[in-house]
Length: 194
Image 1 (cartoon, rainbow, N blue to C red):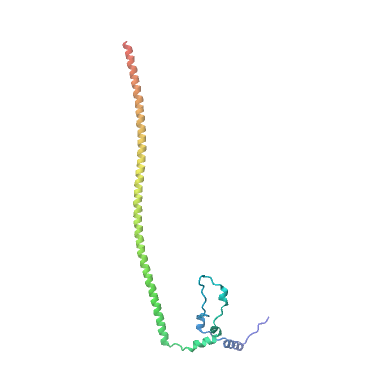
Image 2 (spheres, helix red, strand yellow; image 1 turned 90 degrees about the vertical axis):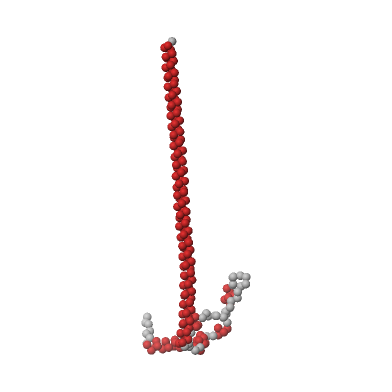
């Protein structure tokens, strides 16, 4: 398969034919919406609009009749802005931008100062709650210590009570045995006297 080669003169001729057939677009035709004058009907009681009614609408006759050539001629018919006018517009736009930027900076400063105050307040509350928490922990530790001490005291009292009752029983049982043996010894002495 062979590819035909174009000569330089043929390619220039094709470029000039293309340029004569296609004129450059105006900037306003690119930035403006294609149908600026269309007003869509609004539904009174429902947010739903049928799509077929929107699709059936055609653009207004003025726009459909206008061609890119007529649009570019209308843009070109206005006189170009002078250097002074462009500078004034640029100054106004930059002043507006600076004002908007300064407003945003001011708003951000206000938000930052408000958040800083809130942060300081919350930090104070956190410190206060920490102190309260430490006090409650100390109180709980004291109560726990008292409960443990009272339980230990009760246990000690029970063990001492059990020990004293045992010693009393031993004493009583031991004292009774001594009384009984001394009573027996006296009876033996009485027997000897007889």
